[in-house]
Image 1 (cartoon, one colour):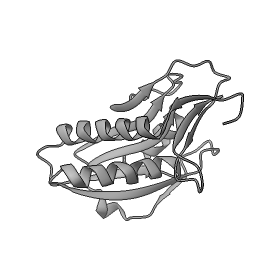
Image 2 (tube, helix red, strand yellow; image 1 turned 30 degrees about the horizontal axis):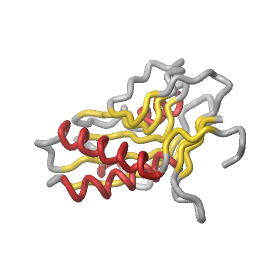
Image 3 (spheres, helix red, strand yellow; image 1 turned 120 degrees about the vertical axis):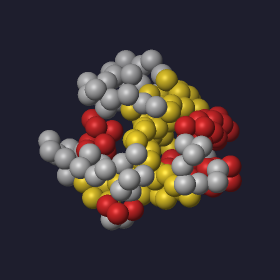
Length: 169
C-alpha cells in the first residue's frame, strides 16, 4: 500500500458489506420471481457478480446479470448493454456501482432503463462519498464516507496478485 493511501475496507470488510447488501436486496424483493443486477462496467459489474453469487445462495428468485457500458466523459448519455431490452423489461432492476461521488455515473446508468417499463429500480454502491451534484439517492450502501473533494476513493477488486481493498488517497 503506497504511503499516501489509507485503508478504508479490507477484503473481509468488503465481503461483509456485500453480504449485508445482498440480504437487504433479498428483503426488498421477497415476492419477486426474478431481479436484474445491472453492473456498471467495470468495478460496478465486478461488485454485481459478487452480489449475484451471494443472492443465488440465499434467494429463491432468479438473478440475471447485466453489464452496462457507459461513455462517462460524454456530455450525453451514450451506453450499451450486453443483454437486450427484453431481458429487463417489466422486472426489478438493481443498478450497481462501486463508488458514488457526484452521481453522474448512476444518473447515466439509470437513463439506460427509463424508456422501458420496469417494476422498480434500486441503486447499490459499495462506498457513498456524498458529493452529489446529480439528484441521485442510493438504496443500498456498504459504507458512507465523508471526504473532501480532492480525496479519491479507489476500489481494488479482482486484480491479479492483490487482495480486495478500498483505499482513500
